[in-house]
Structures are given as structure tokens and as C-alpha cells.
Image 1 (cartoon, rainbow, N blue to C red):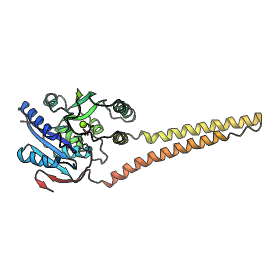
Image 2: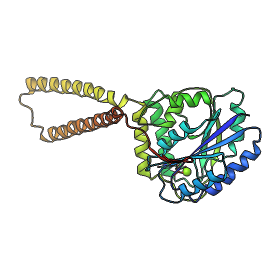
Image 3: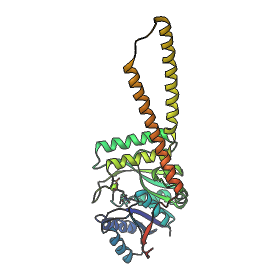
Image 4: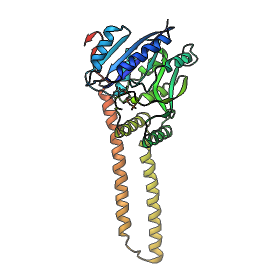
Length: 312
Ligand code: UDP
Ligand code: MG
């Protein structure tokens, strides 16, 4: 029988874990034609998530877990889970039941014969989401598609079931600044998109503030595009051209009409504009440099403290 690994990143998910586990067991019952293993990753939770995972692993040998030495973020947790997974197929799913485990049935149908390499959930609408957040998410997918060559499907989630070949491809990207949504798309392969309506979180609170989401979006764009760096050169050329034109006009005007009127406000606003643009682009350059700096350090993306086999 084929083995499906289900990777679940968990950060302070004590309230939903029991429900999630029951639901996973129910789905495993529905899909009795495959074997399952559950790869939970405790991303340095400060609640009872780890104790619960120890308990589950003790009772059910399908349950495996890795627990981080501190909170490393969802990207790191997903990577750890994918590295843990031993299945012929591997699914990545949120712990909060916003990614309904039952969709695995349909996903498996798409990938089992190799017709598709990956079946992924595409959110068509989301309960309990504010207008600002959904507008932000639309803007992000537009920008991402404009800036990078990686195709970004609007509403794409991390929830997906992949064939081993695709998992290995995802793992072969060893970058430190991981933006998994982009990586999934970058590695290519045939993906079937399954639309679904995302329910509200089963319990607990979202770990993402609006500011954190904005930061994450900027990181994602920087990880997959260097076009912003070229923008400063373009603007530089435009501003040089403008300067030459203004110079010529001034010279001609002076020759024809004599000394022109002093343009104090114009000069001040131009200095401010040019100064501002310079600062902006130096700042952006710094951001890319900082990313490069972190990449060259080649630090591990996460550190494991404990697994189902005990302390490391
Ligand atoms: N998560 C994680 N580490 C973090 C933040 C989140 O492993 O630092 C996990 C979290 O436990 C959940 C998933 O990532 O399983 C998605 O998080 P959440 O539901 O808070 O995000 P949202 O659905 O609001 O985008
Ligand atoms: Mg969620």
C-alpha cells in the first residue's frame, strides 16, 4: 500500500490538536486503501502542544513529531516536516482545520496514478476574513506575478498533496529565506487546483498579525524577484534625462529673456525628492544585502530539540 505522510506545523495549537487528530483518524478510516503517517512539527510552542504530541505518539505509532528548540516560524516548520516525511505522497496542512483533512480523498485521486504531481487547495473565499486582508492578498498576488517569473495563483494555499518526486525537488532548494508558496510554484510539476471555501479557525487565534503578513509578503517578493533592484537604474536614467532637458530650457531661456527668476521652492522640492528617492533605493539595496548576508552564513533553518524517539 502507498504511504501518505501528513505534515502539520503547530505553534500553540493545544486547543485544536485533539479535534485535528480525530479528524485525521476519520479520514484515514475513509481512505483504508493507503497507509498514513502524521508528521507533526512543534514550532517552539509555549502551551501544551508538545505534551499532547508526546501523548499521541505514545498511543498511535503513525504519529511522529519534531519539536523545535524555539519558534522558528511556519516556513521552517514546513521544511522540517517535509524532511521528516517518508511517504510516497506527502501532504502539508495547517493544524487549525482551515485545511479540511477530508480534501485528501480528492487530492489523492488526482495524484495516485501520476496524472498530476501535486493537488493543491485554492481558496475561493474565506470565512471570517476582513476586507483589508483579502484586498491585501489580491494586491500581493498581482505584484508577485508582475515582479517575478514564478506564477502565483490567487488564493493559493500551502495545503497540498505531492508525489515524492516533487517533495524531493522542493527539498533540493537549500535557501535560508524560504518562501514555500513560491518554491512550490518554482519547482514546476503538474498541479491540480481544487477550489474550496476556507472555514474559520476551529479554535485558538491566528498567529499572523497584519504587520507580520506585510513583512512576509515583502520577504516573498524579495526571495523571488530582483526586479526592484533594477528599478533604481531606470529611475536614475529618467531623472538624468529630465535634468538635461531642464538645463537646456534654462540656457535657452536665459539667452533669449536674460536672467530668469530665482526658483527657490523648485530647488528645495527637487532636493527633497532626489534625496528621498536615493534613501529609498539605498534602503532597498540594504534589504537585499541583508538577505544575502543571512544566506552566506548558511545557518540551519531550524533546530530540533526533541522527537518521538526522545531528546536530541
Ligand atoms: N504556525 C507555525 N509557526 C508560526 C506560526 C504559525 O508553525 O510561527 C502554524 C500554525 O500552527 C498553523 C499554520 O502555521 O498550523 C497556520 O497558522 P495560522 O492558522 O495562525 O495562520 P492563518 O491561517 O491565519 O494564515
Ligand atoms: Mg489558520
